[in-house]
Image (cartoon, rainbow, N blue to C red; front, side):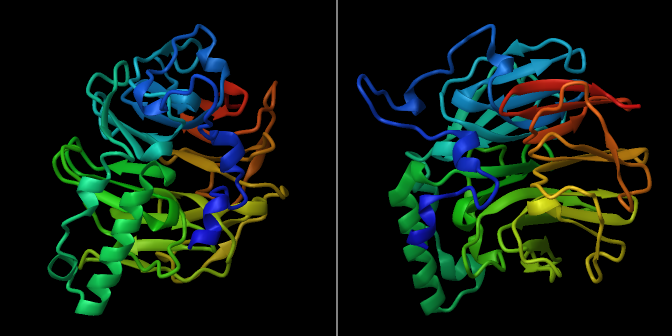
Length: 354
């Protein structure tokens, strides 16, 4: 695994887009430095978007979190206790939200994203990984338990080296976070404590996990090398075979259709729960980092090159939407039934749909 630690981007360019903490003259640990308040925060690099009720919340570089109550027309900056680069955010309701990112950071808000508290980071990760009864908790034999104890020790020693890349919460207490090299933790008490669950994942290569979401009532995760995982009734996450072996960045669902998307314009669709897949031609050949669905009305996918593609037939076909100012995108969210908000390396943009 060590040879892959030089680049976590896996084609998406995460190393460049999400930033890297660098030492220098007067250096202070980003975990000890609150995010700098600036009136230009919304013009910076943003990697994640989420709805908190009617509010839109965006997370990005140097710990910047901003929120909008007018569907992306204006933004206000949140109070954040760290300057770590943030990658993803999710709200199960209008008030409770979690954001994750570099330095193994997990932030929590209880006021809809206006103020945030640090729940977990690379320095405190150790206590959640050590002392786990790997054999008893996961039904492993002695050899497998010893292997996972060693892996947990490695994660603990590396601390902030491994970022969390995706987060999902079902409610204000139950959620999970996933990230680099298959690191995966869950909580049942709103983040007061975290439990690793890597042995439940069918991920023997310890591939990076870029997305996690409950789709059609079942938790799914996507990652490198065409990895699509789906939790079963026994709590294990089985790999779903795909005809595509490239990196997957995200997934969406609408009606009975499940969609996954990734590198070089690849978008695959299944109408039978993942038993069979069909490629959806989009006419683009760049990465598709994000998607969003609005009830049963439409589904949108965005690209790193600024493409915005809209489907009104549950992902069977897509038509391009032409933004007035195309921007490379890292995230997208439905701000209303007629508007998208996009985030990327050039900031935030609201886009009204035709």
